[in-house]
Image 1 (spheres, helix red, strand yellow):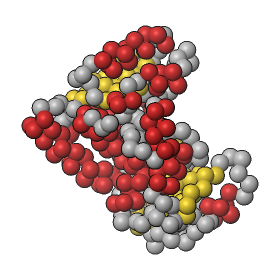
Image 2: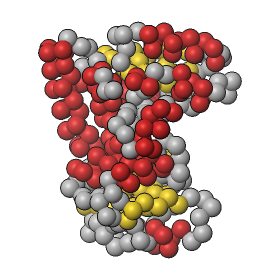
Image 3: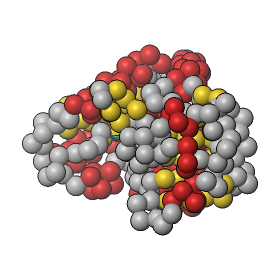
Length: 281
Ligand code: GUN
């Protein structure tokens, strides 16, 4: 019987401590931490994400500002907006919600954000620092995954960690973070031969594919920690990349969807905003 990792309540605990840090920062350093989110166009999922981020900021006392730009915004207009925010000393965190409309090159936009304000951890400098194992602003979802493992008191060092998926937002950065914590790390992906023979060796299995319920109990080693990053809609209901009901009795720990990794991502965004406001160098 596995333990279900309650990401929602763990994230709530983290947000409570962030709220205290924010008020201390306001009192002792006279800094009002602030996050500006840029939303280009009207992608419905992005609108929901941005609203949730704003709500979370308000709840902990972080100043939140959303800049909404039209679907037809040019790359130059967006670059100019970012430049102004880079120069504005009252703005500590900048997040450009992805995806962007096709006339805008995402890599160029991410590279234009001041790396010290890059609360997504997507800037090439922050990615390079993560690669080198140096301190940096790190991507929020992978940070949230490590924090969940720490919260349940799981010893990462020396364990076999397998990640299904090689995205720049989740798969690759979480692999580097687990490596930094001395796990033995394998990434498997669409071209991997015999995925199951590898996932069956995993003490920690992170699934970040984006396809509903593709991982069933035949992928899992008895007692493994299973972290499900997927958010999919199936028959009108949210579900993960893992077939929860099939896996839950075989895994040692498992994250549900919803109430698993998702709430941790926003909590880590708040934490990165504080880190940016404190000014890590
Ligand atoms: N769209 C989906 N996930 C993310 C994310 O983590 N950051 C940004 N900026 N956009 C996203």
